[in-house]
Image 1 (cartoon, rainbow, N blue to C red):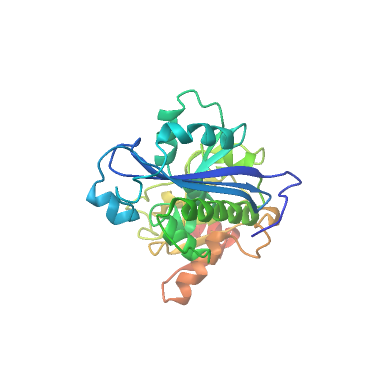
Image 2: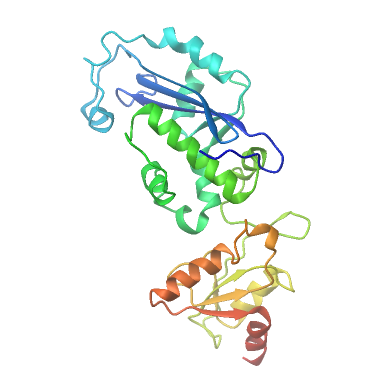
Length: 297
C-alpha cells in the first residue's frame, strides 16, 4: 500500500465491483466494496447475492459463481442499505462503466461524484493503454500489482483501488484533478495558461520533401504547437499525438520538470527510446534542428 497525501490533499474514495448472473445489470450475484484513505485500505466488505434470476453459462465461466453458491445469500434489497451507507458522501470509483450503470439503476438519484478508474488509466499511461489493452488484469500486471482472484468482486475492487493509487502517486495529481481530467480527451496539449489546445494531428503534403516522415512533439516549443504542426505538414510530415512504431521523428522542446513526475524524460521520449532499442528507426531532434531542417527544405 502507498501511504501518501498528494499535493497536501487527503485522498479518500470507495471502489465498488459487482458480478452478475446474466446480462441483466440487476442480476447481481456478488458485491465487493473497499474504502481507501491516503493509499490504505480502511474498510472492505463483500457478499454473495441471490439475484433470484437465472445464471447464464457465459457469466458463470467468467466469475465461477453458480445458483447453488448463492442459494442462502441475501437478496439485493437486503444489502441496498449497506451499499448506501458505504456510499455516504464519498467519491465512488469503479473500473469501467458497468458497475456505475448498475448502481444508477438501484440509486437513480445518486448525488455522489463517480470516477471511472479505467478512464484514469487511459490518460495517466496514455503511451501504453490509451487505445487498447487496458483491462484490469493487464494493467495490474504491468503495474506489478498482485491479483489473486480475478473476477472476484472484492479482489477486483482492491486491485482497481491500487491502480488508482498508483496513478495518483505517479502523476502527483490529487483525486479532484482526475475527476476533471477524465472528462477531457485522452491526448491533450495545454497552453501556458493551462487551457487545452486543439488536436494537432495533420496529414502531410504528399508533394513535400519530407513526405513519409511521421512526427510527434514533446516538451515546450518556442512557437505554438499548432504552428509547428502546420510547418511539419507543409513539408510532407504526418503529425501524430503519441509515439508508436509508425513515428520516425520525435521533436523535443524544453521539458517542464514539474510535469515529469520525478522522471528525467517525458513519457514520449521514454517510449521512443524503448522502440529505438528494439530496432525501430526513430530520430530524436531538437526543435531548433527540426525548424532548420524545415526551412532548408
